[in-house]
Length: 394
Image 1 (cartoon, rainbow, N blue to C red):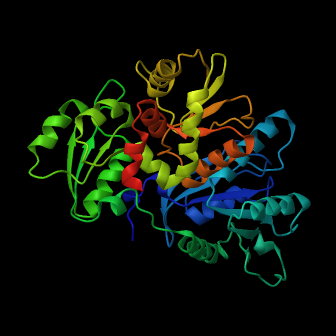
Image 2: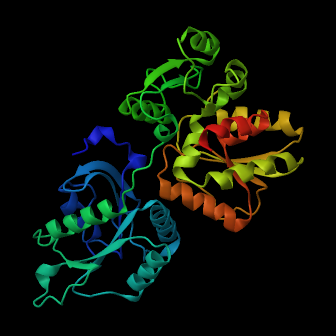
Image 3: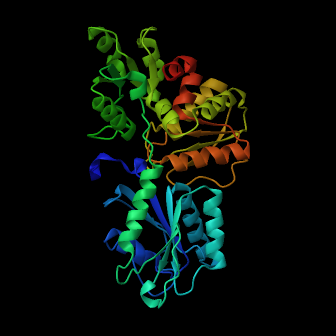
């Protein structure tokens, strides 16, 4: 069994529970997780924001459970809550529609099911309050009768969810297929004012762990020590992987016959459409003064001096284009519904977002006709080394 700490939240299956107000959705979530994850009340609309928790859920293993506000909430505040529910829908790998079994499916429930079908999102229907139903109707492949109060059917619901998780799970390498087993890889990890104290960031951790799992020899250094690090090795490394911020110096100090790429480019391949992001880099050349650019990040770290999104990226674009660009910035779950005002969207590597959310954002940009590129590809393009950075992936 995979341990709780070995799978980061962005890599866990996201199971989101949806339902009308007072269908017993939060009670079902608490019964499934065997925790008081959500506040429960007879008052409709108790859940006001999505409640998200990474946890170990047997027999599923590591998952992220999301409890959402009722999708039939009303009024101005209710509409905001419904919008948060829609955001959770974007991140969900599996959906559970909780229905008041004493009432049955409503028109609002059926509308949500149509939305799930249109998204090709696997789902189950949990008919709650089975303890109040004298004669249970026949089950089908999507529907289970459960009681959050008595626990009836909760075990069966968890087993069905486990099968959906297993059926939908696919193993994808980040870098192991490029390097192979027993390779030697140099990871370039700059330590500047934006580096977190006492730790390395998530994509670096994930790449390091995958390489170690494949019995690779991994050497870590800062960009200022790369040249002497490579010179000290008895043989040339199989690959150099750098933080994108150090691309220019790393490209200069890495011998031409040593393959080189970045963490951000690896994650572009791992989580989204690499080809679409590469095409987005072409749009950087045509930026003009007055154009509007969206810079979006999936994490919510504290912005500070030297921040890549709000400081370094605009400076690099200014140097590359000579244009005075107008910028908007988003972070975390925030991503605009209307993308049409933007000439280009520049996104982080998305290590804190799951694959579903990254693919949603790329699809939204494509539908709006707005080119999208990520940090690593944009920085490589602006330094004239994109072909070299992409070569190891070909």
